[in-house]
Figure 1 (cartoon, rainbow, N blue to C red):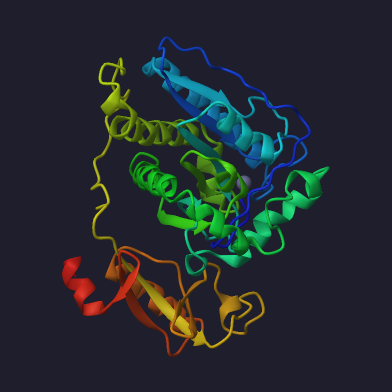
Figure 2: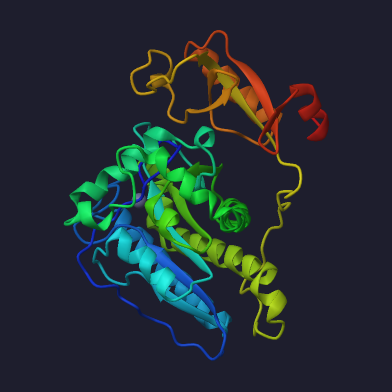
Length: 376
Ligand SMILES: [Zn+2]
C-alpha cells in the first residue's frame, strides 16, 4: 500500500543500500528501458493485510514483479529491465528514482498492494503524479510521506521535496507535464488490464504526489494491485493464479504502451506477441473524458477530512476549488450508474444534500450533458 485514501501520495521507501542494478541483458542496441519497482522490502513490510499469514505486501509485490520481469524477458528482446530490488531488501525511495534517471529509463512502474480500515474495500487503482492542487489528495500525500522521516539522512536526501506541505511540490511537477500525460496513458492501460485480465474492480486512476513518481524524470506510475485487507482479494493475490494474472495484466499494459510509444520509432523491435489472449475492453477515450462524482459538501475554507463529522465517514474524499469554495466529493467514476450508487451510499452515510456532478476533461459540466455523452 502506498497509504490508503486517495489524493496525494508520497511514496517513501527507505533504504540504505546502494542501488541494485540487476537483470538487464538485452539484444538491442537501443532498448526500451523499464524500471520495475516492487514496493517496500526489508524492514518495511508494507501493509500486513488481514494478518492471517506472514505473507505481506512486500512479498506479494516482489513475487508479481519477478513474474512480470520473466514475461517481458521471455517475450520481448528489446527491453532492458532494471529491478529496484529482487530480494527482501529496502532501497530508499531516492535510490529507486535515481536508478530510473541515471539509466534514462523510458518508464517507471512501482508495484504495491492496498489496505483500508474497511475490510470490504476492493479493487485495483493506479496512482499518477497530480498536476494541480485541486486534483491531489492532501491526506494521502501526508500519509504516504510519513515513511520518509524514518529514513536515515532524510533531511539531507529529501531537502528538495517538501514533506510537510506535499502540495507545494506540485509546481515542479508541472515542468514534467508531458511525462505526466504519458503516465496517464500507461495508467489507463494498467487499469484496463488489471480489471479485464486480473478481474479486479476498477478504482480508476488517482492523482497523487508520490515521491518516486515526483522524482522520476520519465513517465511513472504506481499500481495498487488490490486490497490485502480484504480477505477474498488477499487470498487471490496470495495465490499462484492471482499473481500470474496480475503479472500478465501488467505485461499486457506494458506491451500496449510500448507499442504506442517506443515501437513507432523502432518498428522491428518486437519479437513476439502477447502470451495470452486478452478480453478486450474499450480503451478509454483520450479525447473526451467524462467523469462523475458525488459532491458531499462545500466550504469556504479547507476542511480536515479526518475530523470533519461528515467527511470522516468516507475513505475516498477529494476536492476541487470552484470560485472561492472548496467542493468535497467522492472519487470520480466513469458512468452515471456508478455515481448513482455512490450517491445512495453517501446519503446513507448522512450526506443528505449530496448530489451528482460531472466533468468533461476535468472541467465541470452539466450532468445531463455528460449523460448524453456517455449514453446514459
Ligand atoms: Zn505499498
